[in-house]
Amino acid sequence: MSNNSLNEELLQLFLNYLEFEKKSSKHTVISYKNDISQFLNCIGEVTIPEVTSKDVRYWISELSKEGIAPKSINRKITAIRSFFYYLQQQNRLSQNVARKVHSLKTKKRLPNFVEEEKMNILLDQNFFSEGFVGLRDKTIIELLYTTGIRRAELLGLTLKSIDFSDGSMKVFGKRSKERIVPLLPECIALLKTYIAERNKIAECDALFVTEKGKACYDKMIYRIVHNYLSSVTTIDKRSPHVLRHSFATHLLNDGADINDIKELLGHASLAATQIYTHNSFEKLREVYKQSHPRN
Image (cartoon, rainbow, N blue to C red):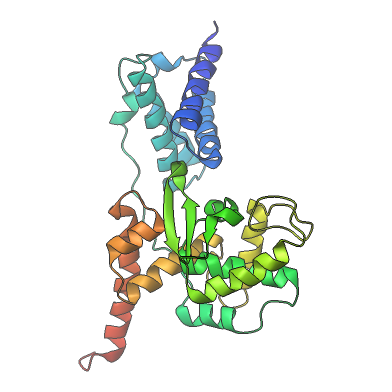
């Protein structure tokens, strides 16, 4: 077996583990595959068992020279660490040399979010056209903003996901983790209206469909959200994830408990949710600057 064949075989074992055992999303598997393949191309004919921490550091330095952002490089380092850790657990490696490699320092970047007033303007005024498309788009924006679900979770919804009897929605998050999310009365009313129109054209189980009745897709949801948010805000990022950030930030600003927000977002740990406390602190700082008599 050639060196490249061995490396490819070990990579495929890891990818199979991610997909079938760990139940990682398709996006995660592709991301790991790309990052690890990039590293394997860098080491050339060196086999994975022969890799040293120097090889990993050299790769990192090459990525830096190419102008790759530290945050992106750190993601790639995490991929290599996970890959080597898996191989070590499978007795394919004697040690995980990537453990000795430190992540790069990055600037903490606060999550982008849309102000409450602007979200209210978008949802309460006539930004959405008459007919099926406008109704569907408004329902998508309303659902993303009032539940904080991820784009992939939205695309995974079916009619069976919605329980109108108790005003809730079943969501399958990362690694197929299930959680129940409450729905606001206004969102429930909008969903009922949308579903009545959807059922006239739908040719699939997906909750959100195109004009032709096919399931909506990833880029379509991004485009819908980006276009409507562009009507009310000029922030750099106007993606579906910004609505998730807005949901969490607004709840925290209005006094919600951070542990409750963690459960609603489907975060595995509180650390992932605590980033939103920085947004709230910045808002308090601004109020303090504007209002304190000694300022």
